Length: 63
Ligand code: SF4
Ligand code: SF4
Image 1 (cartoon, rainbow, N blue to C red):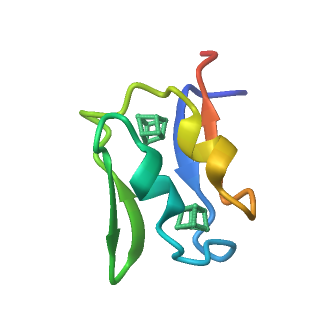
Image 2 (cartoon, rainbow, N blue to C red):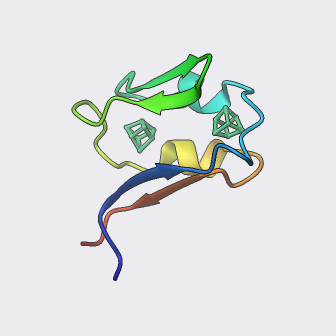
Image 3 (cartoon, rainbow, N blue to C red):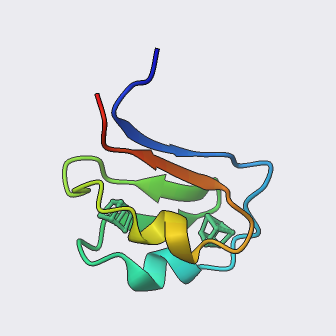
């Protein structure tokens, strides 16, 4: 089953911060735990997924 939402593979993430820079909703934060997403702000636009150089973010708009 495919579930609508945002997911990050923390093992792949380089903590480069590129996704934080491009997020139009300021929903992403780079913390000591890696990238965190404030899902109340996130609109699932997918820009972070496109900019990530290692494919660590997956955004699925289709419920
Ligand atoms: S999907 Fe869009 S709004 Fe959500 S975290 Fe990524 S860039 Fe930000
Ligand atoms: S762009 Fe990708 S690799 Fe860079 S911090 Fe974001 S999730 Fe991690």
